[in-house]
Image: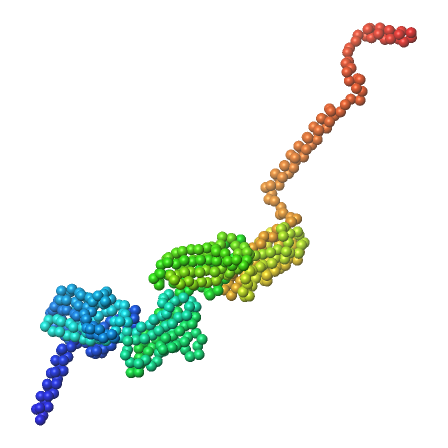
Length: 508
């Protein structure tokens, strides 16, 4: 009896040993008929390894006498068995047309006894049972691996845009009935009951208004009636804009402004090459087109305004067409200006108000005035001037009041607008004062001024003398009859005789 038991024990041990030899030896932890799960769109590896002990005995002796044949025995649609990949003794490869070029085995791994099948990317129709047959020397070994596929789909298809309803669906090739579906976003469970954002129905998750915060890693977990739990990851990308949701650009009147319109992903990330951007501005109740640009490689479409004024302030609309989808964003332009209560130069002693205005205020802005000109320190009134500037040099509030304008207030005044994020914009105003005394000119010009005045006076005196001389020559004589008399010299005797004749004539 003991002999019979011993014979039966040896026989069963021998059969087990032969059965183990008939199968391809696998590394520890692997079993025949194991199952591998992969998400559709990702890669999968169907493992098949030679036992290390068999390698040490015979592998090095027959390195070139090995062939590998991978077959698919059947899938979810009960297909007929067919060849997936074959590597002959000579290294010649044959691949089934439906899976070319998605399947491969690594040449470097073959020499180390690794005959695993790589599938990239996996498709939902790839699910099924696969078998590998490895022939080397005079032996044939085999292993079987079942591939299960988990499919995560989005509707509408990529790209997903902000505020457009989205449906995430998760299912697998497992044949048992589905009991429960759970969703996780960035590792945290997503509540669906009572939520106004997420809704779940039959394994699908609906996101009513996708936001940029909904992008990231999503994981679905499926639990079946046979207690099989399957999960899959999906990286959700939402196409939107960089920066805040309601951007505001602050600009000084007269300066240039650039309004941003930048996508968070380049369009070619989604395989899209045709992109157009359109800008418009609602002004005076009329919609004005401000610019149209087209660029297939860029993700930035800014609008450049060379010189802005209060009339340019307002809301601008940027619409970007990516493929068949259009996303848009509103950008607000706020313009900073300074309005004086007195236009033009200001007289000394006047009361002046400088009003810093900002269009489209959001309520959290604050204003600060500053006198940019430095106070002089090389005059006798330096202390008084410093005290005056300390009073007006820095003042908060939209309105700067100068009760009595003086020469010390002349120069550049700057109004800065601040927000929670820091300084937003600044505008400057140049204050000019009439009747303002000009500081003494440098000594080098004093002599020139004196010399010029002296020359001028001399010229004026010369002109006056010439004018008087001309006036005297042009005056008429007092006795016009004497104007033609000529003085002639007469001898004395003749003069006496003439006088006698004149006397005699007089007596007669």
